[in-house]
Structure formats: C-alpha cells, structure tokens
Length: 224
Image (cartoon, rainbow, N blue to C red; front, side, top):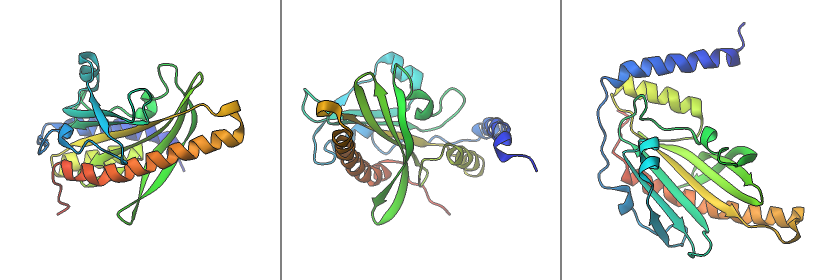
C-alpha cells in the first residue's frame, strides 16, 4: 500500500489545480468594516496601530489588515497581525508562516501546538519559539474564516478547495501573535522556563480574546 506521506505533494498539487478552477466562480466577501475598527486594547493592554510598507502590502496581497503592538513604547509586550483576504487566488493567497517565520535570521527552537479554551470549547493553534541571536520570541498563529478556526495547513487547503467549489467563497484571515521573550538573568534553565511561561500566559490570553472578536468582524458564514 502506498505511503500516504509520499502522496501528499501530489495531493497538494491537485488541490491547487482544482482551486484554480473554483476561483472563476468565487464571490468576493468584503469585511463589514475595516479591521482597524476592532477594539484597540487586548489582554488588558493598550495597542498602537502600525502601517505596513507599500512593498509589504504588495508582497502579502492582503485585502485588509491590522498590525498592532502592545505595551510601552520602549518595550513591546506583544504584537498582533491579522491579514484578511476577501478572495484567494493565484498570487493573492495566504502564505504559511511556517515557511516565512524561519527567515531574516530567525531559527525555530520549538514547534508544536497550543490548545486554548475559547468560550468553553477547545481551539488548537500553532505554537513556535524562535531565536535570532540573543533575541527570542513565542509565536501563536492560526487561520480564521468561513466559520472555522484552523491550524493544520493541509486541512486549511482542503477546506478552502471545498468551500471555493461548493459555495464560491474563499475568504480567510491569518492571525499571528508574537510575544518577545526577555533574556533570563544568568540564562539558567529555570529562569528561561519562567520567561517562557510568562510569554505563554500573555499569548494564550491575547489569542483567547482575539478569536471571538475576529469572528464578529469577519463576514457571516452559515453552514447550511
């Protein structure tokens, strides 16, 4: 019996080809209001909007976005990025942070999943710890839209294909929360673990608040 892992690249290619067919029948799903109109505070911390450069906006091809830093000006406690695509097509679709994060000198220290309690229901997001020289950061990211919160890249692609063909819709948002990890005094293992736990608490709270908030900001999706 063929190894399913060997068939994965072919399956992904097939998804991409089929999606191109479905794209022709897609509907645009505009946001009810700009993402920047969402409440500014998150995890009891005030945020400040930052602008993407023209080059960044062109590279990501987002329809709308919000990028906010939270905490005092001298030391960012965490940051939030939401990039929304009202219709995905070739050259105008979400790029996986799994490929983009280990860039610009950043290396993956840990990768895995985090399970959050959102309104009494478990929600799984991607969890990364990255390092760039002495700098480290905890990253949570997930995909949200069309009535779902997803983390698995393959599941996201299959759902996108199904919805594009069956419903003519492919809108989705990429959400990323980054929490800088301060250097531990003496850099002992115990101190490092304490800093990770502190960053984790911030990321979990921010993500837990952001998921229902963004759900209200995205276009309505009915399963029927």
